[in-house]
Image 1 (cartoon, rainbow, N blue to C red):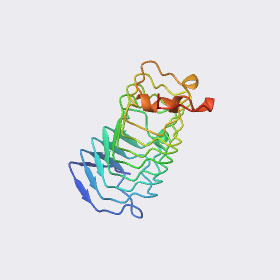
Image 2: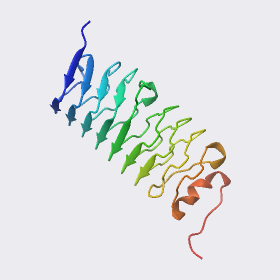
Image 3: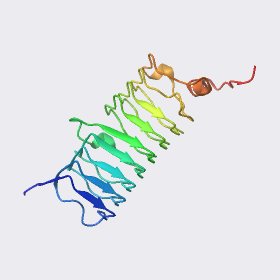
Image 4: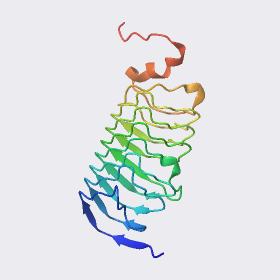
Length: 193
């Protein structure tokens, strides 16, 4: 079967839920307000592509390549990023809803999550060294045996991270967020003097 090679194309309000995308590689393409919900994106390659205002909830990502992919204002519910190809995996998220997604054992070094909702997202055994969580809601996000060295959580909130179960050297937190590191002890931290 021939694989398509598509470069520099813009897709506007396309619905890929039934027909799907042509099998192949998409380089430097823009997907604006497209619907990928429950779509099968397995084996596709996205290099330097931008997804803006797209719904990719529950899309299948088996061996999907995301190389320098940028997601802006996207609905990414329940995505299993751990199924993506590891080769040159690189993503950035701005204003996205990543609830219930999983990044199990994924390398996310220096990945930026900006103004995202990341509730109940699983980062178990992932490498988040030097990652930045800027203004993110991390309610019930899961961090177990994760590398959080030099990660920046200073402006994020609602996280609960067990320092005894994660590598956290030089990770950055705000004073207000330190309580999220003590949850397992069931203590109350009073902000008042």
